[in-house]
Length: 143
Image: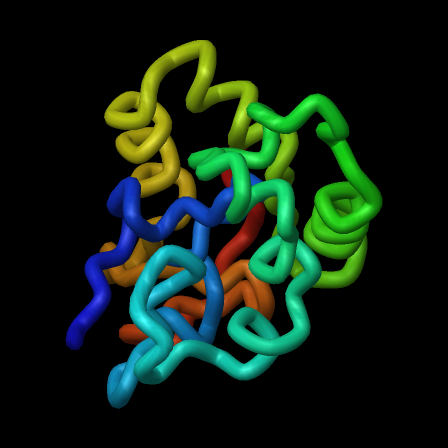
């Protein structure tokens, strides 16, 4: 199964855009994202991530974590802090969820495509490396 970057299916319950992950951008056997099938799913996401193991998420069939009365929980805040501080480019799951609620999924996805597409070739940029998956060009943060 090939994943499709910058689609609603690639937005994880916490608000992270799985399209930005270098594992989802892999040219061979890309990770299908949090909502995808187990086949080719990155080990961290399928086995370790507290959000993907969240009983409340599963029991209540929440689409996004912000539907939970405990939002933002420790697991969501861990993602927020990590994606705001540990990688060359920044992403905010909390801001992503706010934008989805405020503007709708299609407008959010259009903004994500514009923000995370390589200026040189149009390929997808990895939040983890700051590099374009297609041409390898280093990217600067776009707002």
